[in-house]
Image (cartoon, rainbow, N blue to C red; front, side, top):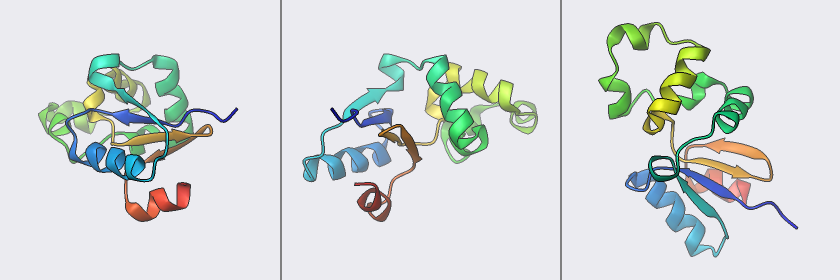
Length: 116
């Protein structure tokens, strides 16, 4: 049996909406995991950090990033980044797609076409 494809993010994100529509329009089965409603597991986050790196996971373009104090942003390291992502999962770049144990960040038609 194939592993379930999971899309991680927050429901009101426009990029998440585009990714969900892309998958639905192609009748690709997936689960959606909303960080705000369902939370974020430390083991899962650590696995993403190991696979992708915390630098790739932190969205430096969003409101959550801009709301962090400058000294927090400037002193970010693995440990503090993980703490911030657990506390404020909206700071994680979206969407994060997990398919067959492989994680993918962001969304574009070309990227998803190559994954599926």
